[in-house]
Length: 110
Image (cartoon, rainbow, N blue to C red; front, side, top):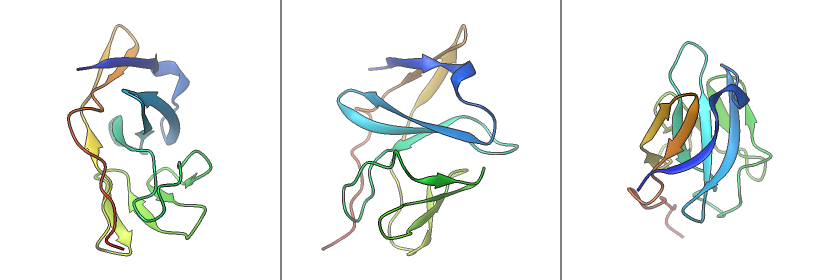
């Protein structure tokens, strides 16, 4: 089920924003020269919200342990075994909607 989370104008190209949808932290990222995407907003290693993560327009870096992901796909860069779950996202009339119930967040093995 899609949940309204914000206005598109609040996410600049090359930027990101942490929102809540279906009681889950969600990263909305608009990578440079890419499209708006939605990923789990907690680190798969520690479960820490990624609100303070660095985003350079392509790569998201967790502030806790410096794990990194390519937000064009959610694929892990370092370490390679820990991807981010991606959620369906749509934009209608300038409003961003996310279906955070469509996919469970991913977590690294202990």
